[in-house]
Length: 104
Image (cartoon, rainbow, N blue to C red; front, side, top):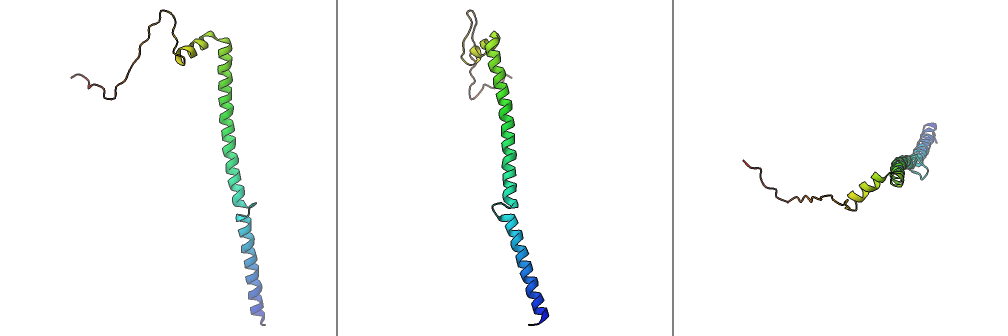
């Protein structure tokens, strides 16, 4: 066997081993690609947690207002339950699909 041929075999084997290592580092279950996807999922969960914290604070503030503020209770009763005070007049506005054209 010539030294040139031996050198080529060693070089080819080394390159194949290096390529195999790179492929495993990228595509293995603990590889770079999987770590990137996990990091993206983690960022998304952090964002969702932040939004849920804000929503929880808004709900806590609403609950505190409903426990202590009679105007907040009245507002909910009027808007969501359609309740009125004695003497109030209620107007129902009905929109039609084809509104009349403006007068000329």
